[in-house]
Length: 353
Image (cartoon, rainbow, N blue to C red; front, side, top):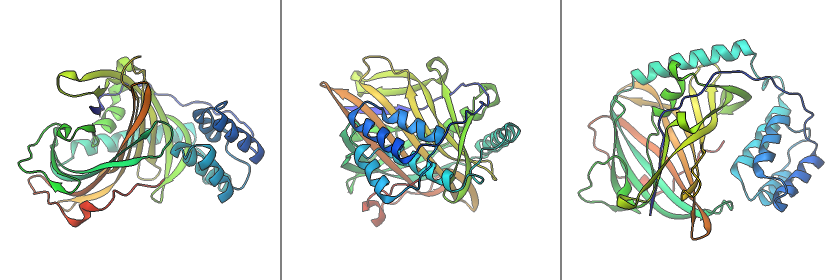
């Protein structure tokens, strides 16, 4: 069974919200909510939202971190939201949101820089190291299934072609370039380069950006925005199965985007499929892409560093979650051969928040 996620165009509307003032959570309130998560009387999503909306009024200790891991089923989003709240507690001035006027300036400058960068993107090749794993949905206890090495050729026109180079260290002879790496079976993904950013920032798409907090990404001060789009405008496709048995669905999208506060470039995008049709085998689809600066032919470009793709699949009455952790390495000019090296046998490193 093959599962894939393809990201297409987003069409959303622009606005800046008012922010409600609520008292930060006390330690007792947070622990009570955490136990509610364990008992399923409080959802993880609600607790994450509460942390981001209210913040915390207590010092975050290793004991609270450990309790969060155990009672929250080691949920990555919950752990990240707690760390974000602690950073805001320590530095309330430095983490203060920009004014509405500043927000407009940030979006306008980011739009211009992003669309300009898309136009100037070169043809290139890159190697993807892909660690694939799976777990029962909601547990976070992923077990490695295999490791792929895939060569990607990208054209400035937006065309992407993929060549499966190795599976678990076994080199694939006579590999042919395709639009994805479906011959490996399991979960695959495409479109990690410029498509998502370009469609978010095109003027005619009227994207809506809601500033929610500040953050630090690889030492850079960023402003974090939320975005959302309905299914009939998002045009995002997810695919279940392969060949003649393949099923596809069009979904909506919601997510978050981190913008460098001084350079006005996007350093991270998180997205989640919404409005998935009832009865579709894939019940959840999420992706996080981290971007970083890299050199190609002595020029610097902002390109994907790591992508984390997760699909939740319901099968035979049980829910499973697949994870593709993808690291992009060895960006080079188009036409350069992609070589399998000793580093391709090492585990794919996760990008920590």
